[in-house]
Image (cartoon, rainbow, N blue to C red; front, side, top):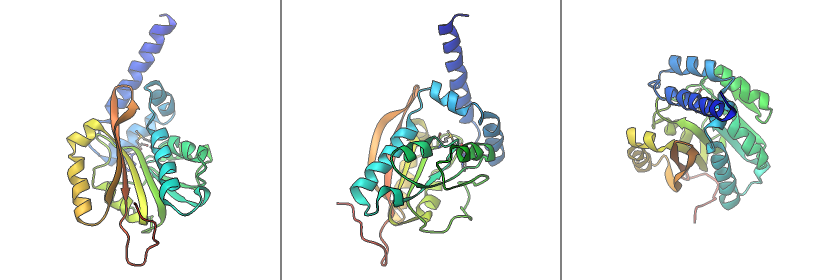
Length: 235
Ligand SMILES: C[S@@+](CC[C@H](N)C(=O)[O-])C[C@H]1O[C@@H](n2cnc3c(N)ncnc32)[C@H](O)[C@@H]1O
């Protein structure tokens, strides 16, 4: 097998693994098992598939901080929900964020994130399809989640918990694969959250690059202001 054939075989194997991850029915045991096995080769596999979600999500967080938040970047408390091996944290750190916490369902993926040393705290065994019982309300200026609102992983109503742990006037930034957004009627949940006063859709990048075989939408939501909250406003 020549080098190009080897490369193609590796890319096909990476795509198969990514596709297999979408068939896990949001079942916490199956997801944990799958990512336990994948943790050591995850970065290589998604790199082979041209995964650029982490860079885009981190750059959106940077733009939101510059445009709307009074605190300097290094003082912004930011939560990376479903941090995986830490690809988003590494990008956030590159952009000047310093107070980065992360959690993930998979203990093994979370351990990889910890090893990047860009996170302040990382917790494994945290399920975003349940209440985030270890996380207090209104704790973060920005919450980001990349590659987690994806088929077979976290259901759209996981956004509610991300909104709860983010402070009023703070932001939640999430990617959704196009196929996930369609299959889960993600926009209907966004409308419900808006109607319930939990999140306001503020910006959206449609059909942005994500992986080689599919684009994603990138969402920026703002947590509505409460009576006693600070006053950064969207224009
Ligand atoms: C495609 S990876 C994305 C990881 C990282 N955010 C990135 O962009 O590289 C999906 C991650 O979501 C985590 N995950 C899946 N279901 C989850 C759940 N219910 N709660 C929290 N994390 C979950 C997986 O363990 C995995 O690390």
